[in-house]
Image (cartoon, rainbow, N blue to C red):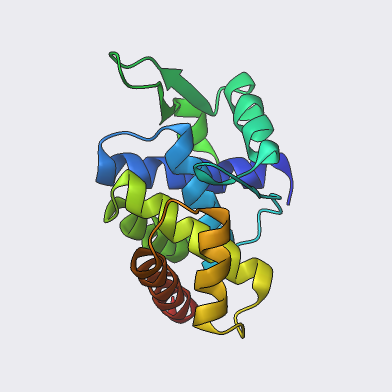
Length: 175
């Protein structure tokens, strides 16, 4: 996928998240792109690592800078304590939208908008664990690994996140 195709998908996702959440920052985009790649057939080829706030892609961060430099996305400052939000520029809206990914983008934006920041971080962390261990790994094994990565999270909360991740993977397969 070339940069324009990735920009088309990321800008459509940004627009969809903004419609549902009222704004879209890098944290939401990082988590939404990870979710999109994990639960759908949309493959943007971003590599993700796990940081304290969940999966993070340096490649995506570089592309966000590229998209800004090519006037596909813009950053708008927000009042303290909020960080800047991404908005899709006129040029970004003019990109050929990847209609084959529209349903998946809508699905992911809807899911992301239903979770608060903490619950979303837990969900995508559970997806990261599931992806790294394989979908066949037992729930208990994944819960244990989740808690090794996030020791501050209680076992029941980790289980809820893993089970929610499994449900979203099942739903995503039907989209």
